[in-house]
Image 1 (tube, rainbow, N blue to C red):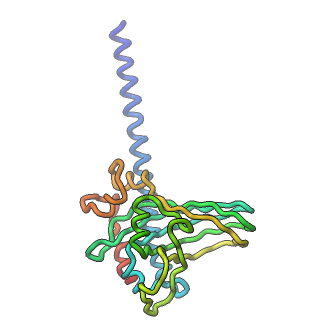
Image 2: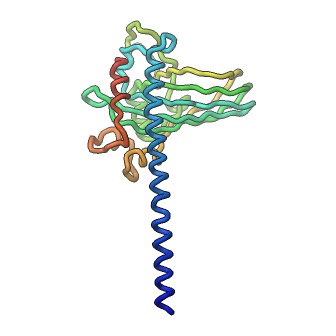
Length: 232
């Protein structure tokens, strides 16, 4: 009798274990598919913003930038009190002038004031100073707080990077209706869960993603890198 009870218990454990493994694997595969879609969407957003005459990024600023952050589908809305949320990624300039593997990020923040409606935006941010770069890698970046974000100069004409002021230059495009005067800081943080799923490494850090050549992402980021290099 004891033998049968133990056998039944063992079978139950095996069913539980093997029943959970496919589900966990499916979740990881779904996350990777979402990350691949985000990578492709970020490449398209950058290309469209960088080449649109209304938002065209000067090549001189691209060549001088230390990193590029691309945030897609930033949702914003509210009445009196509101908020914003978006997802995207960041790539860092390598010593040889190429671009690193991407690290996924999230953007969030609150706002207040006389506001109504809703808006969806795409953002491209050029990191212009080493101080801002250090704050980002330390996980301590707040636009409007410790880091200044300013609208970047637009156009194909040459711009002197040394004469342009600001930690981060921001280029954006928006759709929808939004009105009123708002205020509120915006934070940008690395998405640890998405980075772990994309690289298949637990506790992977942004610094490792940017500097460790042995890390292999779930898919190639060659198309994004070529798009960034073409903008220079």
